[in-house]
Length: 243
Ligand code: GLP
Image (cartoon, rainbow, N blue to C red):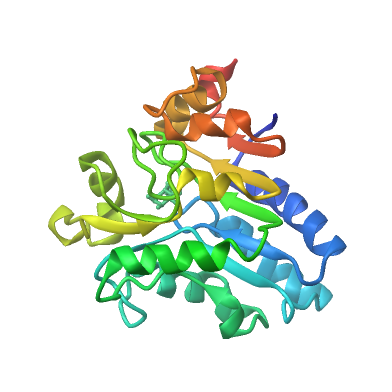
Protein backbone atom coordinates (compact mmCIF):
# COMPACT_ATOMS: atom_id res chain seq x y z
CA UNK A 1 0.00 0.00 0.00
CA UNK A 2 1.43 3.33 -1.04
CA UNK A 3 1.14 6.63 0.70
CA UNK A 4 2.17 9.24 -1.90
CA UNK A 5 3.48 12.70 -1.00
CA UNK A 6 4.21 15.18 -3.80
CA UNK A 7 6.40 18.11 -2.72
CA UNK A 8 7.39 21.41 -4.30
CA UNK A 9 11.13 21.04 -3.91
CA UNK A 10 13.93 18.87 -2.58
CA UNK A 11 14.00 20.52 0.84
CA UNK A 12 10.32 19.70 1.34
CA UNK A 13 10.96 16.12 0.13
CA UNK A 14 13.73 15.74 2.71
CA UNK A 15 11.55 17.20 5.50
CA UNK A 16 8.72 14.79 4.67
CA UNK A 17 11.16 11.86 4.69
CA UNK A 18 12.54 13.04 8.02
CA UNK A 19 9.01 13.07 9.48
CA UNK A 20 8.75 9.35 8.70
CA UNK A 21 12.22 8.71 10.14
CA UNK A 22 11.44 10.73 13.27
CA UNK A 23 8.24 8.75 13.79
CA UNK A 24 10.28 5.54 13.92
CA UNK A 25 13.15 6.94 16.03
CA UNK A 26 10.75 8.54 18.54
CA UNK A 27 9.16 5.16 19.18
CA UNK A 28 12.27 3.03 19.30
CA UNK A 29 15.64 4.21 20.50
CA UNK A 30 17.23 0.99 19.27
CA UNK A 31 15.61 1.18 15.84
CA UNK A 32 17.08 -0.87 13.01
CA UNK A 33 17.46 1.34 9.94
CA UNK A 34 17.97 0.19 6.37
CA UNK A 35 19.94 2.89 4.57
CA UNK A 36 20.54 3.85 0.97
CA UNK A 37 23.18 5.80 -0.90
CA UNK A 38 22.84 8.06 -3.97
CA UNK A 39 21.86 11.71 -4.03
CA UNK A 40 18.19 11.17 -3.11
CA UNK A 41 18.60 10.48 0.65
CA UNK A 42 21.34 13.08 1.27
CA UNK A 43 18.81 15.76 2.30
CA UNK A 44 17.17 13.33 4.75
CA UNK A 45 20.59 12.55 6.26
CA UNK A 46 21.23 16.32 6.62
CA UNK A 47 17.95 16.67 8.52
CA UNK A 48 18.92 13.74 10.78
CA UNK A 49 22.25 15.43 11.53
CA UNK A 50 20.59 18.82 12.20
CA UNK A 51 18.07 17.16 14.52
CA UNK A 52 20.84 15.26 16.34
CA UNK A 53 22.70 18.55 16.94
CA UNK A 54 19.60 20.52 17.93
CA UNK A 55 17.70 17.97 20.02
CA UNK A 56 20.54 15.75 21.23
CA UNK A 57 18.74 12.67 19.87
CA UNK A 58 21.16 9.79 20.31
CA UNK A 59 21.93 7.01 17.82
CA UNK A 60 23.96 5.00 20.35
CA UNK A 61 21.49 2.13 20.28
CA UNK A 62 20.50 2.43 16.62
CA UNK A 63 21.88 -0.01 14.09
CA UNK A 64 22.02 0.36 10.33
CA UNK A 65 22.17 -1.99 7.37
CA UNK A 66 23.06 -0.57 3.98
CA UNK A 67 21.60 -1.80 0.75
CA UNK A 68 24.61 -2.20 -1.46
CA UNK A 69 28.31 -1.73 -2.21
CA UNK A 70 30.41 -1.74 -5.36
CA UNK A 71 32.51 -4.86 -5.87
CA UNK A 72 36.16 -3.78 -5.80
CA UNK A 73 35.74 -0.65 -3.66
CA UNK A 74 36.69 -0.69 0.01
CA UNK A 75 36.66 1.51 3.07
CA UNK A 76 39.61 3.57 1.84
CA UNK A 77 38.00 4.33 -1.50
CA UNK A 78 36.46 7.75 -1.91
CA UNK A 79 33.61 6.39 -4.05
CA UNK A 80 32.71 3.40 -1.91
CA UNK A 81 29.30 3.44 -0.30
CA UNK A 82 31.11 2.84 3.01
CA UNK A 83 32.81 6.23 2.59
CA UNK A 84 29.58 7.83 1.37
CA UNK A 85 27.73 6.78 4.52
CA UNK A 86 30.49 8.03 6.79
CA UNK A 87 30.73 11.39 5.02
CA UNK A 88 27.00 11.98 4.69
CA UNK A 89 25.74 10.64 8.01
CA UNK A 90 27.72 8.40 10.34
CA UNK A 91 30.61 10.76 11.16
CA UNK A 92 28.18 13.51 12.22
CA UNK A 93 26.03 11.46 14.62
CA UNK A 94 26.91 9.32 17.65
CA UNK A 95 26.26 5.96 16.01
CA UNK A 96 28.70 3.20 16.93
CA UNK A 97 30.83 1.94 14.06
CA UNK A 98 30.15 -1.65 15.11
CA UNK A 99 26.40 -1.05 14.72
CA UNK A 100 26.74 0.02 11.08
CA UNK A 101 26.71 -2.68 8.43
CA UNK A 102 27.49 -2.72 4.74
CA UNK A 103 28.64 -5.44 2.37
CA UNK A 104 32.42 -5.76 2.03
CA UNK A 105 33.22 -4.72 -1.54
CA UNK A 106 36.74 -6.13 -1.16
CA UNK A 107 35.70 -9.63 -0.06
CA UNK A 108 37.84 -12.25 -1.79
CA UNK A 109 34.69 -14.24 -2.56
CA UNK A 110 31.82 -11.79 -3.25
CA UNK A 111 29.21 -14.56 -3.52
CA UNK A 112 30.15 -15.86 -0.07
CA UNK A 113 30.05 -12.27 1.22
CA UNK A 114 26.50 -11.90 -0.15
CA UNK A 115 25.44 -15.08 1.66
CA UNK A 116 27.08 -13.94 4.90
CA UNK A 117 25.33 -10.54 4.73
CA UNK A 118 21.92 -12.06 4.03
CA UNK A 119 22.34 -14.51 6.94
CA UNK A 120 23.20 -11.61 9.28
CA UNK A 121 20.26 -9.59 8.03
CA UNK A 122 17.89 -12.48 8.66
CA UNK A 123 18.65 -12.16 12.37
CA UNK A 124 17.12 -8.66 12.51
CA UNK A 125 14.01 -6.88 11.31
CA UNK A 126 14.52 -3.53 9.65
CA UNK A 127 12.10 -1.00 11.17
CA UNK A 128 12.48 1.56 8.40
CA UNK A 129 14.10 1.05 5.02
CA UNK A 130 15.15 4.17 3.11
CA UNK A 131 15.16 3.77 -0.68
CA UNK A 132 15.97 5.77 -3.78
CA UNK A 133 15.07 4.53 -7.25
CA UNK A 134 17.17 4.23 -10.39
CA UNK A 135 15.96 5.78 -13.64
CA UNK A 136 15.45 2.20 -14.90
CA UNK A 137 13.30 1.35 -11.87
CA UNK A 138 16.01 -0.41 -9.88
CA UNK A 139 16.04 -0.35 -6.09
CA UNK A 140 19.34 -0.98 -4.29
CA UNK A 141 21.17 -2.54 -7.29
CA UNK A 142 18.34 -4.85 -8.32
CA UNK A 143 18.40 -4.15 -12.03
CA UNK A 144 15.48 -4.92 -14.41
CA UNK A 145 15.05 -8.67 -14.77
CA UNK A 146 16.10 -9.45 -11.18
CA UNK A 147 13.70 -12.04 -9.75
CA UNK A 148 11.40 -10.76 -7.02
CA UNK A 149 12.55 -13.53 -4.68
CA UNK A 150 16.25 -12.56 -4.92
CA UNK A 151 18.15 -12.22 -1.66
CA UNK A 152 21.54 -10.49 -1.23
CA UNK A 153 23.63 -11.25 -4.32
CA UNK A 154 26.30 -10.07 -6.72
CA UNK A 155 25.00 -8.32 -9.81
CA UNK A 156 26.26 -6.79 -13.04
CA UNK A 157 25.27 -3.16 -13.41
CA UNK A 158 23.37 -2.11 -16.52
CA UNK A 159 24.72 0.41 -19.04
CA UNK A 160 22.01 2.81 -17.85
CA UNK A 161 23.13 2.61 -14.20
CA UNK A 162 26.79 2.91 -15.14
CA UNK A 163 26.07 6.12 -17.13
CA UNK A 164 23.78 7.49 -14.39
CA UNK A 165 26.43 6.90 -11.72
CA UNK A 166 29.40 8.14 -13.79
CA UNK A 167 28.75 11.60 -12.33
CA UNK A 168 30.27 10.37 -9.07
CA UNK A 169 33.38 9.13 -10.94
CA UNK A 170 34.53 12.38 -12.65
CA UNK A 171 31.90 11.77 -15.33
CA UNK A 172 34.03 8.86 -16.59
CA UNK A 173 32.01 5.71 -17.28
CA UNK A 174 35.17 3.61 -17.45
CA UNK A 175 35.84 4.34 -13.77
CA UNK A 176 32.45 3.03 -12.58
CA UNK A 177 32.68 -0.51 -11.17
CA UNK A 178 30.67 -2.96 -13.28
CA UNK A 179 29.53 -5.21 -10.42
CA UNK A 180 27.94 -4.67 -7.04
CA UNK A 181 26.83 -6.55 -3.94
CA UNK A 182 23.20 -5.77 -3.25
CA UNK A 183 20.38 -6.75 -0.95
CA UNK A 184 17.77 -8.53 -3.04
CA UNK A 185 14.16 -7.48 -3.55
CA UNK A 186 13.01 -10.15 -1.09
CA UNK A 187 15.47 -8.79 1.48
CA UNK A 188 14.14 -5.25 1.06
CA UNK A 189 10.53 -6.43 1.25
CA UNK A 190 11.08 -7.82 4.77
CA UNK A 191 11.37 -4.28 6.21
CA UNK A 192 8.43 -3.22 8.39
CA UNK A 193 8.17 0.18 6.80
CA UNK A 194 9.68 1.74 3.68
CA UNK A 195 10.24 5.35 2.62
CA UNK A 196 11.22 5.89 -1.02
CA UNK A 197 12.57 9.23 -2.21
CA UNK A 198 12.65 10.30 -5.88
CA UNK A 199 13.34 13.69 -7.40
CA UNK A 200 13.92 15.04 -10.89
CA UNK A 201 12.41 14.49 -14.31
CA UNK A 202 14.65 11.50 -15.08
CA UNK A 203 12.79 9.53 -12.38
CA UNK A 204 9.26 10.29 -13.67
CA UNK A 205 8.89 7.11 -15.75
CA UNK A 206 10.33 4.85 -13.04
CA UNK A 207 8.01 6.41 -10.41
CA UNK A 208 5.01 5.98 -12.70
CA UNK A 209 5.88 2.35 -13.50
CA UNK A 210 6.45 1.57 -9.81
CA UNK A 211 3.09 2.97 -8.71
CA UNK A 212 0.81 2.51 -11.69
CA UNK A 213 2.47 -0.04 -13.93
CA UNK A 214 2.08 -3.80 -13.90
CA UNK A 215 3.86 -5.92 -11.31
CA UNK A 216 6.85 -6.90 -13.42
CA UNK A 217 10.54 -7.54 -13.02
CA UNK A 218 11.03 -5.05 -15.91
CA UNK A 219 10.47 -2.45 -13.18
CA UNK A 220 12.03 -3.98 -10.04
CA UNK A 221 10.46 -1.26 -7.82
CA UNK A 222 6.97 -2.46 -8.82
CA UNK A 223 7.42 -5.22 -6.19
CA UNK A 224 6.71 -2.49 -3.63
CA UNK A 225 3.04 -2.66 -4.72
CA UNK A 226 2.98 -5.82 -2.60
CA UNK A 227 4.32 -4.15 0.58
CA UNK A 228 1.80 -2.88 3.11
CA UNK A 229 3.60 0.24 4.34
CA UNK A 230 5.45 2.31 1.74
CA UNK A 231 5.62 6.11 1.72
CA UNK A 232 6.73 7.49 -1.65
CA UNK A 233 7.97 11.08 -1.51
CA UNK A 234 8.58 12.84 -4.81
CA UNK A 235 9.05 16.34 -6.14
CA UNK A 236 6.78 17.64 -8.91
CA UNK A 237 9.21 16.62 -11.66
CA UNK A 238 9.46 13.00 -10.50
CA UNK A 239 5.69 12.90 -9.94
CA UNK A 240 4.86 14.55 -13.27
CA UNK A 241 3.24 11.48 -14.87
CA UNK A 242 0.99 10.84 -11.88
CA UNK A 243 -1.30 13.81 -12.52
C1 GLP B 1 22.32 3.80 -7.10
C2 GLP B 1 22.00 3.07 -5.80
C3 GLP B 1 20.52 3.08 -5.51
C4 GLP B 1 19.96 4.46 -5.71
C5 GLP B 1 20.13 4.90 -7.13
C6 GLP B 1 19.57 6.28 -7.42
O1 GLP B 1 22.30 3.00 -8.23
N1 GLP B 1 22.49 1.73 -5.77
O2 GLP B 1 20.31 2.60 -4.20
O3 GLP B 1 18.61 4.48 -5.35
O4 GLP B 1 21.52 4.91 -7.39
O5 GLP B 1 20.52 7.24 -7.11
P1 GLP B 1 20.25 8.78 -7.00
O6 GLP B 1 19.49 8.98 -5.75
O7 GLP B 1 21.60 9.41 -6.92
O8 GLP B 1 19.49 9.19 -8.21
